[in-house]
Structures are given as C-alpha cells and as structure tokens.
Image (tube, rainbow, N blue to C red; front, side):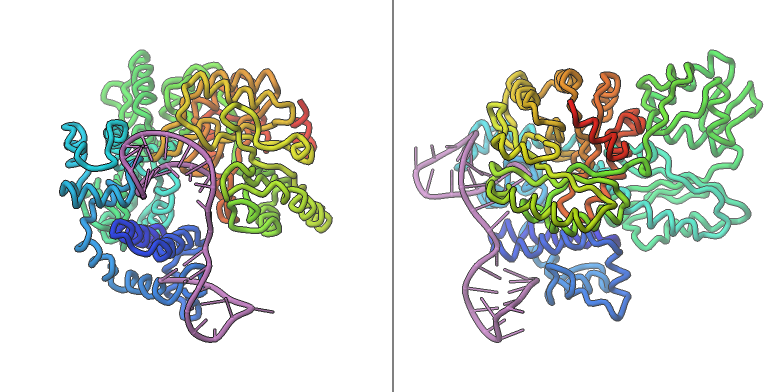
Amino acid sequence: MENIDYARVFEEIADLLEIQGANPFRIRAYRNGARTIETLSQPLESLLADEEARLEDLPGIGKDLAGKIRELYETGEVGRLTELRQEVPGSLVQIMHIPGLGPKRARQLWQGLEITSVEELEEAAREGTLEGLSGFGPTLQKRIIRGIEELKARAGRFKLADADIYVGPLLEYLKRAEGVDDLEVAGSYRRRCETVGDIDILATTSGDSPLMDHFVAYRDVQEVLAKGPTKSSIRLKGGLQVDLRLVPRESYGAAMAYFTGSKAHNIVIRGIGRERGVKINEYGVFEGERLVGGKTEEEVYAAIDLPWIQPELREDRGEFAAAREGRLPELVAPEDIRGDLQMHTQYSDGKHSVAEMIEACRASSYEYMAITDHSPSLAMTGIKLEDFARQYAEIDELQTQHDDIRVLKSAEVDILEDGTLDLPDDILAMMDLVVIAVHSKFNMRRADMTRRITRAMAHPKVNILAHPTGRLINRREPYPVDVEELVKVAAQQGLMLELNAQPDRLDLRDFHLQMAREAGVKIVISTDAHRTAELDYMSFGVDQARRGWLEAADVANTYPLEGFVELLEK
DNA sequence: GCCGTTTTCGGCCCGACTGTTTTCAGTCG
C-alpha cells in the first residue's frame, strides 16, 4: 500500500470518531498523523522494513498510531477501524463530506431519520422530509441537493496528484516482468488532466511474457475485474482502476494515440484521415486493408501530414490548426522554473520556518523565491501586523548568508469584501512584490466579485493575483467571477496571474491560461507551499501550464532574477 | 492521541461569518 492509503485509514478513523463525538484532540491527532504520512518523502513501507527506523520519531506519530500502522502493514486492516465501522455506519463518512454537512449533522440524520447513505439523503432532501430535523432549513436542503449532484458528477475521479502516487510504483513493478519492451500510460493521465477516471497502460512484449499474470499479482490489487491475454483490469486498494493492454509492436503508436485521446482529438484525426483516403484506428493506419503506419505516434500524425502533437494539447482546442501552420507551442518544462513565488511559513499557517523554506528552495536550485504569509484578516492564521518588520529583518539576515538565492519579501494579502487590501500602504511599501487573493465571502454576485477583485488589482503595489477563481477540485466550485475581465485588467495594468500548483487548486484552469497567453498576460506558477515537501507540487503546476499552451516565455518564474524583477515594474 | 529544557498530566489555533435559530454547527484560511 502507498502512504496515502495509510493516511486514508487514519482519516476514516478520525471521521468516524468525529461522528461519535469523540475528544476533538484525539480526532486531530489522527488527522495530524494522516498528514505526516501523506507528506512523507519516502514510502512508509520501506521504513517499516527497516529495523533501525522508528515510526515513533515521525512528528505526530506516537506509540498508538505507530502500532496501528504496523497492524495495517502486517494484517491489512486496523481492528479499531473495524470496530468503529460497526458502531457507526461507514457510509455516513460520505454524507459528512457533502458541503454544509459535518459530523454533527451526519449523526443527526442517522439517529433522527435513519439516513445512512447519500442516496437516502438525496431522496429525503428532495421529498422535503428533512424539515423535521432542527437546523435543516430550506437553504441547507437546497445546498445538500446541489452538493450531492456535484458529488455524483465527480464520482470515481482521482486528482492527478493522487493517481500519480499509485502509478509510479506500479509501472516500476510492471517493468520487472520478463519480456516487457514498451510500457507507457496513455489516457487522461498522459494528457495530464487535473483528474483521471482510470489508468490505461499500454505495453508490448517479446516472447512468452508473463506480464498479465504479473499484473494481476500486484501487491495492491483489491480486485481483478478482468483478465485476458491482451487486456486485464484491476482495482487497486485505493480504489483506482487500472487497465493494461498488450498491443502488437506494429500498432503501438496507433494504440497510444487512440488510448491517449482525447475523444474529440481522435475524431478529428480520423476525419482528416478519411479525407485523405486512409483509415486510422487503434490498430494502425490503413490504406484499404494494408497497414501503412502506426508503429509510432509520429507515423499516425505523419499520415495526416501533421507533426507529432504533445499529449497535453490533444483536446481539439486549436492544436490542429497550430500544427498545420507550424506554430505548435514549445511547452514550458519543469527544468525551466527558476523560482517559487508563493509559500507560507510559521509566521502564518506554514509548517516550516523561513530558514527551512529557503534551504528547501536552494535544494531545488531556485534563483529566487518569495515568502508570502497570509495577511492578518485571516483569523488566527494570518501573520500579525507587528510581525512583518520582524520577518523581513529575519529575511535580510538570512539573505546575508546566501548569495545563490534571492529571497523576496512579500505576503499573500487578502482582498476584503469591498476590494480594498488587508494591509496598510506602509507595510506594502516594505515588500518586493505583492500577491493578492480572495479567501472569504465567496458567495457574492458575479459582477460584484469581479468588481471587488479588479478594484484590488488596481492598487499600484499589486503584482500577482493568486488562485484567481478559488476553486478546489472535487470540493468547491469556483466563486462566480468573470475571468476574461480579470485577464483584461491584468493585461492593461501589467499584472501577473498565478497558476496555483496545489493539486486540489490548479487554479487557473487550462483554458484560462490559454486565454491569458493570448492576451499577453504573464503567468507565475507557484506552489503555495505550506511545508517544504509541498514545493514539489511545482511539477503539477507545470503540467497544467502545458495544458494551457504556455511556453517558458509566458511563465514569469522561468525568467532569470533580473528579468523577473523587471516584470514586477509596471 | 501526541507532546514535553514541565517525565506526567495538561494543553493542543480560533474568530468572523452564515444559515439557522433563539444557542449552535459548519466553513474559511
């Protein structure tokens, strides 16, 4: 099992304890433990195998949680969780994750109306039988129905970052099977979509390879859904479905193109093929019955007189015209990134100190970085007003110790309801750059929200608008806002827009990035790291940027320090 | 349930806001 699977067990225990009304600090201890495991830089199971390593040395893991980790490792389950599931219907956990509902209301539904599943809840909400429960007014009922609809729409889809956790080790395992030649993931995973439904792996083998047997024998298989000589399907313990297809070598490129998609992209390919008198399918390129290509993807595209198109662009969003006209973008790559422009420290809600964040950025060979703690209006999370001078003095002091990285003084300044900024001008004046963002009052009307943000963007000190739509993948819709207008204002005022690389934000969306690029607005890809390990989220930001057609020149933090600083001047 | 320059039990991050009520649960970061 992967670390995330261990973390999920602790999260589930925490959820069930919460419904039971257990001690909140005990609940938090489980969540802290889950967090520690999830952000561990090495596989928990390699620690477990290491005699020397002590789980109890991990932060937030004591004797009890360490015991439960070992129990899960050795037996595949945790007794306490099994007990809890008997005491509290496990399906209440799903109910608890519907926006507007929490542990108390989940328990209320269960004990008051014997509702234990999302289906029962939906029926009750639609029939209005929730009225009888105190606290369940008409607004909340509507919210519940909407929440359930959103839940269904995303059912079974994994965030790319979560899928990544499973795919790496699985591929490594599969490559160890005898006779495996090619092995690659296709599908939305290869296109680096923000979420993936399942994982499609294609392979070619030589001789009598045991690949399919090897595949279904993987240690993390929950269920073998199908097994045949050319296609097998498994469900992993984490719930992710993986299909493995064995294809003939001469069809590998055609199959790769076909299974990478998108569907819309493939339809265009086949259509152009038909115009030119060739048939293109997952087995190859055919003239009549004769196979004339398809060993590589290049051959497929060549059959319709086009250059190979990057998977991230294959959405039928202009890539065919660009390919025809020789103006496919040269997409930004992880190694182009020279700095990270949003991160938090212990001064606000970050886990690590300024010094630790600097060390981590130096380890990434960045040339520059910005410390952007939350402004004070975020209750108990934001940095205290009087701490800015102290933090900036600390940065100055640390800066004297390093000439290989420039530490920019900044803050993630909250945009208040009226579009003013949450910090006075004398504090803003101390900063090298100013990042602004919305963190509260999401339910404004679209026009009002747009005006609120553009007013904040008009402040002369502002450089970057962070996570411009506020959406959380699978959890929260974007607040209503006119992104086109934000892009226009950014272009007019020489502001940059952030592409937030947190795997559950990836905000802006790919098509917004394309829009910004066309308007000449520079994008910064920032991790918004709240701990050193999260600086690695940069790669997900780069994936998203590539889906948005961005080249290095479109991304401000690919510029050398001097060039980046010039971009700050408006 | 974890943690500790407190070694043994008390502290652990919480305040404003919203929808619903009339005292509270859930949501933000």
